[in-house]
Image: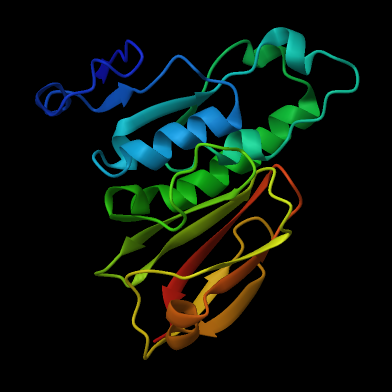
Length: 210
């Protein structure tokens, strides 16, 4: 069962007790709008209960020179990510790329019911970075996601939360499967560095090394 949003005005805890998800907004296109909604609502409602959809207008992706920005799907990773619209009209390349985003999302989805940390305060401007972290304290694992919106800074250090400063953590890029190891002490003091072009995102899954 799903609740209708009415611009978010029908999202209440009593209703959510009887629903699987709540449709958080009719704003289904625009990565910054969707990300902004999820930044706020995850403080109160698990991401797995917040229904969001990648749904571009037909006159967007049918343009001959259209290329799908990855951030349009990646902004949905902190919610119950779905797709909508005229999927049968999507260009083949776009279908393949969205399919990859969905597979990455499925790998991250179990963490959405766990601890949520907004690593950068929610901003009222687009000239900034944004970042969130989902952490499972029982597994000592989770994922961190950074967004460079229109900030002039190409890099950002993100201090992670909930992890053990005395442990080592292995990070994996779910798109490339590239890995690296960082100490909990470094991650909780100096932080992890993200370097991105404007209007892009990077997600890293992590786990404590045994």
